[in-house]
Each structure stands twice: as C-alpha cells, then as structure tokens.
Amino acid sequence: MTLNKHTWCIIMAGGLGSRFWPISRTDNPKQFIDVTGVGKSMLQLTFHRFEKICPRQNIVIVTGEQYADRVREQVPGLLPYQVLSEPLRRNTAPCVAYAAAVISQIDPMATLIVSPSDHAIFHEDKFIADIQQAVQTVALREWIITLGAQPLRPDTSYGYIQFNEKPSLPRALNLHKVVTFTEKPPLEMARQFIASGEFYWNAGIFVWQLSALRKAYEEHLPAIAESFFSLGLSTPWEELERVYSQCEAISIDNGIMEKAGNVHVMTASFGWSDVETWDSLYNVAKHDSNGNAIFSSNVFTYNTRNTLIVTPQNDNKTIVLEGLDGYIVAVNQDTIMVCNRKNEEMVFRFASDVELKKLIDNK
Image (tube, rainbow, N blue to C red; front, side):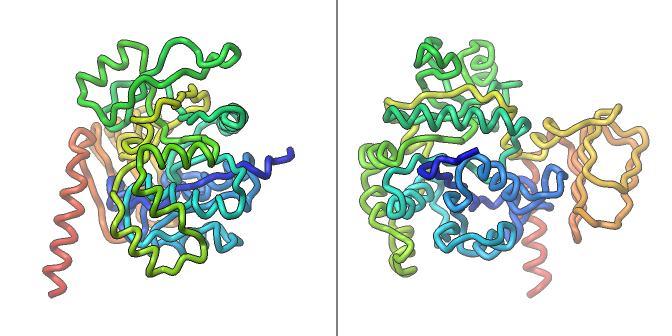
C-alpha cells in the first residue's frame, strides 16, 4: 500500500501515568510499559499502528525532556525532528502547536493526525480504515474531525461528545457535527448522556489539515499561536524554555475543540479504551471463569473473583491470593499494592505517602 507523503502523525507521549502506580512511576510512565501484556509498550504499539497509515518518517513524538532518550530506545532509528522534547509540561495545546510548527517547516501541505501514545485499540484494521477516511475527508474541507467511541457505561473518567443526529455528509453516516464537549461529568450526568443516545466518549484523536489547525489556534489560542508557530527544530533550547514558561497550560479540548465551529465527530468502529485507570484496564482485559484479569504467569488464586492482578514481565515472584473479590493487586520490583477496585482513587494517596516516607527515611 502506498502511503500519502503529506499525512503526518503527532504522538503525544509526555504523560506521567500516575494512576497506574506502582507499575507506572515518574521515571517510567505508562506509555513506556507493556500495560496490556502483549510484549510491546503502549508507545511502541501506537507507533507501529501509525506506520501503516503514514510514512515512518512522518511520525513525530512529543515528550518531556527527561523521556527523549527512552523514546529513542523504544523506537530506534528516528530522525532528529521525530522526537521533540518539551522543557515543561503545559498540557496538549502547546504540545501540538510545537509539533505542528516543526512539521510546517518540512511539509506545509501536511494533514495531521494527533493521537495519545497510551490508548488501547482492539481492531487495528478498522482503526486504519477510520483514520484513512478522516484524512480523506479533511483533505477536501477545513474541518476538524475527532474520533468518538460508543460509550459502554456511564464512566466519569472520560470526556463526552454530543453530536447532531443528522450526518455531516450524505455518504458518511458515521460522521456528525459536534454540538458540545463535556469533560469528565459527574455520574448522574453521565447516566443522562448514555440514556439520551446522543453522546460518544472522546477518544482524544484528532485529524485536520495543517492550515486548519493554524487558523484554529490563531482564532482561539492567539497567544500560543504567536509564540509557537515561529518555533522550529533549530530553535535554541533557552528560547524553547522561555516560550514554554510563559505559555498557558491548556488542553486542546478546552482551548480549541470546545470553541471551534467546524468540529465533526466520526464514530470509531475499532474498539477503544484510554486505559487511564486500573479499573479501565480490568474492563478491557480478558477474564477467567471467576472474572479475574491476570497479567502474570505465576499467580495462584483461591476463592478469588473479579480481581485484577499485574506483575512485571520476567518477574519470578509467585503470587498466591485467597478470598479476594473486586481488588487490584499490582506488584512492582519493590512495591506490592492491594486495593479495593471501588477505592481506586486512593492510588494517588498511596503514591504520595510512600514517596514521603522514602524522603524522610533518606534524610
């Protein structure tokens, strides 16, 4: 298959993955881990997926300065412009603007796919077909297309997209004009969204022409547009630090998608999860006859149900569990966490308390 030389992908790989503690930590966040147990990290899976959609040299990964070497280690052979380091975390709008500025110097005719690095895609062939349809659609129109997944439950950890029931195009029944975006609604509101049948989950994947992206930034985020679209691969690090230190920290959803009038949502047919939390991993994993999701080869369970069990690859520990129902068991090289799935929000406190004790003990 011949790949379109003007199709580019921006992969955002700067997240900390703090919800997956203790497996994911600041020095080894989720995107660099084989979370789903398939032998490749989330970043590697994302990169290889997009290699089938655009030329390999057209994939740009944006990450934190501390992770640039890790990116090159996991995806060898990348050209200098394919790994862009951010000096500070400023959310996704500055991240995308920086990558778009660099790409514009290489290919002003580019069509851009913007994607997180750490989401799960279950049907790759359908994913490729959907993205290709989106690329072909925006090539003829100054639209922004966002991918929306069919919601399976009233989940409060996802963003929601309300759509117009009338298709945007006569022959594209899976494409609708966006009415509203709602970020992580309360449970009762999420239930109302699901009941209405008018909402998708926001998959966080966007497709647009470079020219449309620039216009959107100039209209809705003019300060970021002015600062970032003058950047390039040759920009001195000191100047990059200055620009990032002075820019607003804002997501592309809040900064552009919620405001722009040319956003359309495409129904994702490929099966999707952002795998943002331990419970979301449990929900997408294969379960045994007792409802357990086990990512380990050395686990013995007795009278244990509806439990997620995760240990690192090549870990020789044997895990024996008895009497658990609805728990998370996550084992790292130096930490074992056992937590009720209903209390998953406690993970942040666990991580904070453990790190604080380490600091006190090392004084």
